[in-house]
Image 1 (cartoon, rainbow, N blue to C red):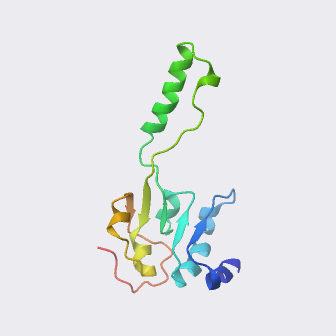
Image 2 (spheres, helix red, strand yellow):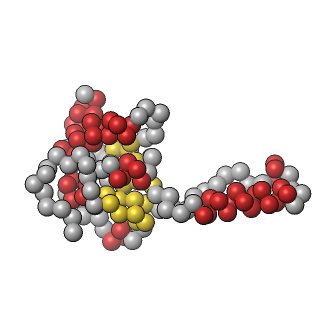
Length: 136
């Protein structure tokens, strides 16, 4: 399998977005990476971190995005042209981390990383080392 070959040569692995039902294949993707103790980062974010990816971007609050869209609409209603409205929304940086995965790969996240994390998960559904004690 291609993932097994990556494990022989890879350093941290960035799992990108794709249109395939990736959530159904996540176990097949993560098991060899976990066995090789490779850190993983998900472009898709929280759902994949819940599934055992080490880190991912988190969108913990949709209010900021909603406010951005509402302000643009309000400006247009008040007479501004759509063209004059800012088009790019930059989401505030927030992270999610799976502490169980961190434990299983032997990574002790520094305090600077933990202080930037908005969502923590302590479960790894694809844990190949069932005898490892749970994160407390």
